[in-house]
Length: 266
Image (cartoon, rainbow, N blue to C red; front, side, top):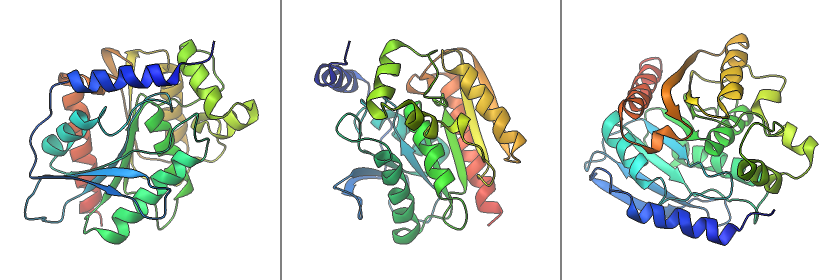
């Protein structure tokens, strides 16, 4: 049965409206990323004076179909306030209106914009669920001088060919790339060469259908020589970063630690 995308998006937007507002920050503003087809972004700054800080480019989850700037506004505020970093949330192009590699191109454009147009001391790239997949693919494409300084993957969908996820997630993946060969090419776990990625924090959830592929991706990254911090958060489910509690606090601490370490090594 095909997804009722308008209904699902309306429900997602309603949940976002009902979610408590995140921490107040000194400066929050929307912008349009250059070199993209009117892709919106939202910049969260923790210092009204604009002192240079690390910036985390964040890609929301939502099965490649749902999610937007509002759905993850609270989380981005929490990361900015808790980790003491600036955050750039990207409203990347979604399925079914857009197909792969559109969201990856948007993530790359966001990294370029931060690097060329801000005074960020270091740049992280991350996301949850589908956002984690897109972040991985963008980081792979940017290997070399343009690569981010750290990568953060929260419950990433690492294998779009697998049938372990819910029917809704599988359906969304098919909308994104209906060809099985195309889904394999967009599956980080199935990419031959994972070397050259920056230090990576990869968090999985104990009770998540995507845990096994996320755990396997962490192992493959380590085998490829990537500096990986991997933790399976006990007692959690998929998308735990959207809920308050110790697992989210630890994830935010991971962001602060990894971006701080990257700044120290520049």
